[in-house]
Image (cartoon, rainbow, N blue to C red; front, side):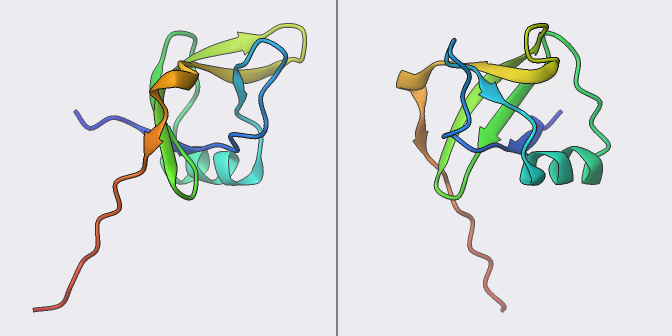
Length: 85
């Protein structure tokens, strides 16, 4: 099974360093892929040029979904360029 990929803003972290999963790009990806977030769910989080794997949690304090990531594991996003034959 392919890992679910969801956009997130890497500048939109809470005080605990978790990425908030509430920006427009995130909501669009969730809707397009019909993803219903659940605690413990694994996601590949990406932005324009970065990506990292994360685990979904619910922030009771902010009443929204977040992703726990390892900030040291962020890497450049692998871009696939398709060419016509």
